[in-house]
Length: 114
Length: 112
Image 1: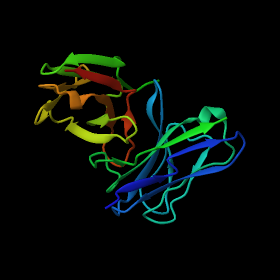
Image 2: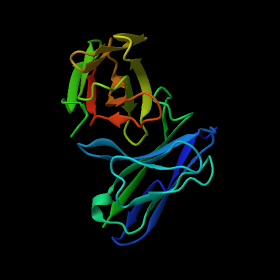
Image 3: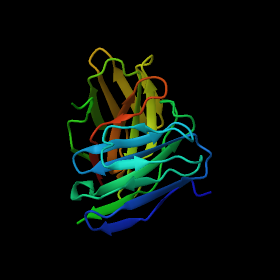
Image 4: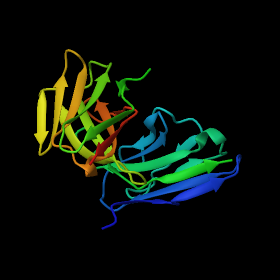
């Protein structure tokens, strides 16, 4: 059982390039999330999806887009990367999106934008 | 404005002693609170939670206390073990399908 996987593990990217971070879960969870973790800033929500076909904006959505074509996959796209998007990105999922549901996190993608 | 605050970036405790991690929040409408634990190079994992209808929840060595009037919660770990060394995130949420709001985290070091 894989749980939740993210790819790539790490990436160095030139500013201005397009990048898609992949996230897949095999728990049949309805809700999925993307967070970024920066030193001194904790975990900040970028986008979320409570069910396939729907998405919502989190605290820091600018410069990022997501899609939820099916239950398992929730890719995060940076259309034109900037150095301030250097961060560790975590994908998570939960059963229903309710606050009481535990969120399960992937191992993270470390992204460096030069 | 930070809605969930963890004012101590780091904490060092001796093995066997109690670790107390604190968290304050500003939104009195929050009614569900959680603690997540994160080891280096791994994603956060759920540790313990508490609903606003309770003031204490215990799970083994971990206890979370909630003081609604002070908008304050704390995580107690007793006895602390070296394997507890990690970053601990406090999170809060409104009821329903609303996203969690995380604090900045506190790095706990348990010294043998």
